[in-house]
Amino acid sequence: MNYLNMTKGALLAGLTFISTITFAQKKTETDAALALQAYEKASASGNIDESKKQILKAKESIDLAVVNPETEKSPKTLFLKGEIYTYLLLMKALPDAEFTKNIPDDAKDQAINAYKESYDISNKYDSDIQNSINNIKIQLHPIGSAAYEAKKFKEAGAIFGAINDYNSVLNKIDTVYIYYQGLAAESDENWTQAAEYYKKCADMNYKPNEIYRATAMAYIHGGQNEKAVEFLKQAIQKSPKDKYLYFALGTIAMEMKDDQTVLDNLNKAIEIDPKYSDAYFNLGSYFSGKGFDLRQKAGDLPPSAKKESDELLAKSLDFYGLAMGPLEKYIEIVPKDVEVLSSLVKIARALKNTEKEAKYKQMLDAAKQ
Image (cartoon, rainbow, N blue to C red; front, side, top):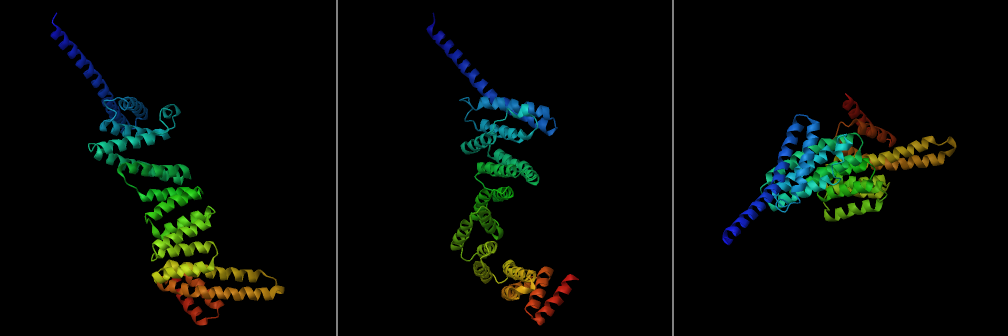
């Protein structure tokens, strides 16, 4: 008996067996890729039934590939899993309970983790993953917007959040979608969550003209007034020359009926930017509104309450006096604002300033033409 020939034969048989196993393991990766291509073709042609069939076939193959030692760390396998599980996620909205029961609840997380691992361990599929993430954003954005328009605010927030979850694969954050999450939470009256999202935007200096106020207002609506004021005060300490912060704190103080804080902060915003029309408008409108309310109360009193009526009217003139200057500054910047011109005419009349009453009446008439 030739022992050497037997050994060679056994070795060849063993190598053939190993090659067969390796081929079989690689085949599942190939099968997944082919099924994915078939899904994309069926989807593009609008064949929903074939799309469902092929994506489940792709899932079956990729699930085998990711547990095989030969392919579990393959960048291609991981990329394919990201693709397949993302498509499954997008198809979860289909009205087909029998089909959707095959889609894992954590399909999004599995897709993102697979993309991340592929992106991190190899450059081979980087451009493919980048293109996929961009396409996902394009697909998810209108879905989130439609959910928001349909007043499905929780669903909309989750979709907008999913976009940034996918962005995280590329180590990116799209601030606008955090802002949209805040809007969705606010519309759902989830004030704590809204404040959290808005604060993230504020920390990234997104939409500073409105985000500080939005954050603080979310705190206030959530019954956290002190947190709102503290948030803005801390922000002012970090950026003492930021007019938007003083504007936001002054505007929040309007909601809280804190006259002194309104004056201090809106005037500070104006000090930083003497052309800050919004600050002039808010300051003037706030105090003119208080004056108007007092005059309304005085008018509602019976004739026997003359003393109380006179006190209310006198106090209203104090407020009108505080309103006149800022509204005049505002109208210098925005000279054709009919609403403000009308207010100036009424305030000047109440203050018995006939010269200014005539001036703003003339401007009002011109603005209406």
